[in-house]
Amino acid sequence: MQHTDSRSYSPASHRHKTPLLRRLCTMADQLSPDEKLHLITRNLQEVLGEEKLKQVLQEREVKVYWGTATTGKPHVAYFVPMSKIADFLKAGCEVTILFADLHAFLDNMKAPWELLELRVKYYEQVIKAMLESIGVPLDKLKFIKGTDYQLSREYTLDVYRLSSMVTEHDAKKAGAEVVKQVDHPLLSGLLYPGLQALDEEYLKVDAQFGGVDQRKIFTLAEKYLPSLGYAKRSHLMNPMVPGLTGAKMSSSEEESKIDLLDSAGDVKKKLKKAFCEPGNIQNNGVLSFVKYVIFPLRGEFCIKRDPKLGGDKIYTDFEEVEKDFAAESVHPGDLKASVEVALNQLLDPIRKKFESPELRKLSNTAYPNLSKTKGAGKSAKAGGGGGGGVDDELSPSRVDIRVGKIISVEKHPDADSLFLEKIDVGEPEPRTVVSGLVAYVSQEELQDRLVLVLCNLKPQKMRGIESQAMLLCASVEGDPRRVEPLDPPEGSSPGEQVFVEGYETGKPDDRLNPKKKVWENIQADLKISDKCVAQWKDYQLMTKLGQITCKTLKGGNIS
Image: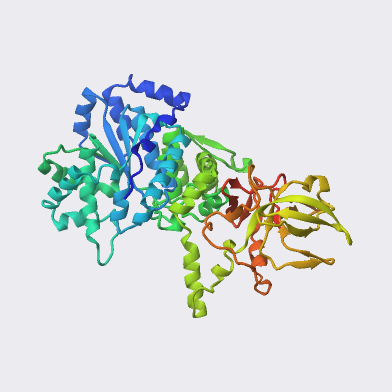
């Protein structure tokens, strides 16, 4: 495997710190060992080796690491360890974040080998975006990738040494709550806990931080590392935050989680469905988010309510929120709406960062859209054959949309409402296009303009002249109707391909069959977002240079 240059994990380019966190980092020098210990251990469910931490704090700052296997996309529950990492930094700890790519592969191949590198890059970007969102200074953190040291001769030899000591029973028991459990487990899953134990030595830390579901791995490390001549470390355990369904929030269970890149609309939809019974404070993922994320980061929480129902109420103590919810003084709808506001404030900077074409491409290639494959499989079963399912019929990669440049425009000789354009779409000769834009766009505005052109429709005669393509526009119905040609990114050239994010690799049809209504079905899901970005369903239309946009017609249609 080709390794990423470890320099890509250097946070030197991220020197920005909020005044608050700059002050907090300075405050760490003024804290007593007991005050630092309080920050390190607050809100944790369990600490193993607390006395050892106390001894270290009497002499120097604690070195701690948190590892994350680069499997499914991180979701909002990751804000729980992120807020705890903020605590560690406030206490002056030296913190290492491990992107555990080899672990991701060993865990029943949750991350295929060919995607490991891409998923590490995705995790790096999204974890850093989360930390920046909550104001954590990145220059106080060290980022490292597992395969940067786990494939070394020394580490590999220690894996063999450890394997000669750990029983199959202990290895299986240690990974029971972390490694995916299947009827016929692979040997790789048995190696996983031992590698995680060795990481403590190779990262030279005093403590490992993780969820309480990792407890058996932590106790395995405490039992076996001394047998290799290595020190026993302390272990810091977060509680497991319930997901939206009431069970553990999981990357593999869509309904249980809110993705970090979910739109505000998706957040609202998922929170609306979330398990949150009136008065029930058990397995309540919405309430847990308030406790483990909002309060540690903000120090307060505002319940937003209709003035008729008492108006807004600001809480400075989680126990009061829990008490009022248990007493049904706080309605689940108000709790959800208030968490929605706080959550979107955390997610907005992350969404903004991932608007860049480079990061959108990274997201789509690290996590290919498997729903297309699943959909095709379902339709194949329903139709008794493969390759002709509904999903294939509606794939936006079938339409050939290109950047074009209008090199001439004039009125149609036989129709006052039509323009006759010659458009360069990257072919030896320009295409003739007839468009009904006379009432909406001036001839001068169209001349030499870059536009979007649908190139694989069947040519059609319009008032005696064959139109060889369609000029794509945004429109908003009303009185008057408004129409604007779509705009490619600045710097685009004629002939550049337009694609829907996540569908970059599909090949357009040579010509769309009008009887199949492929364009009509795809066009029904084309729209303009409230940020004037062209979309198919919730996926953006793009070129290699960026997004397709229009100037003003928010919420419009595309035709």
